[in-house]
Image 1 (cartoon, rainbow, N blue to C red):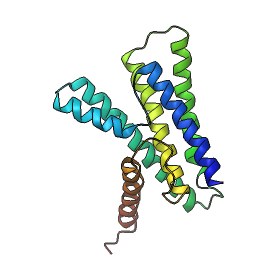
Image 2 (spheres, rainbow, N blue to C red; image 1 turned 90 degrees about the vertical axis):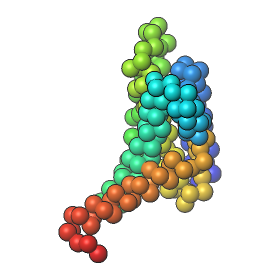
Image 3 (cartoon, one colour; image 1 turned 60 degrees about the vertical axis):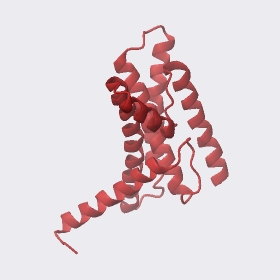
Image 4 (tube, rainbow, N blue to C red; image 1 turned 30 degrees about the vertical axis):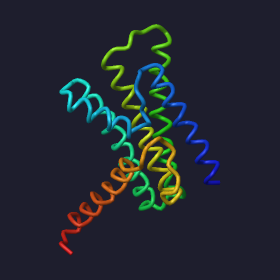
Length: 174
């Protein structure tokens, strides 16, 4: 079952990445490459590119964190599957990305705002997917082209935030 899930979602990640690379000139599931571009643009002081690559990385990271939050909320509410919410959210983000593809194919010019929302939706979806599959597989399977650091930061960062939240909420300092 895990193999089928890994193969299916890896195909989705590759498909998303190919479309974002062909249409937008950017990879959205290759966070490692985007970290490299971010560092390069930072050193070269190309501020517009620094902001863009930073946005991509944060979109991926927030997608991973959102997955962690949704899975934890589902677990606490006793839902049958804690994985359904992040996968539905991923589908919604990929639908938004697909709308952008349709708009481009209809001849609309690529604007800066459109570039940001399309890339952001795709990167957020890839963060959601990678974190969800990482959790399902017990950190064995990663479906995007990434070392896992960004995904782990999103998942573990959310766990830390929720731990602090629980401590604050109950008023204890244990």
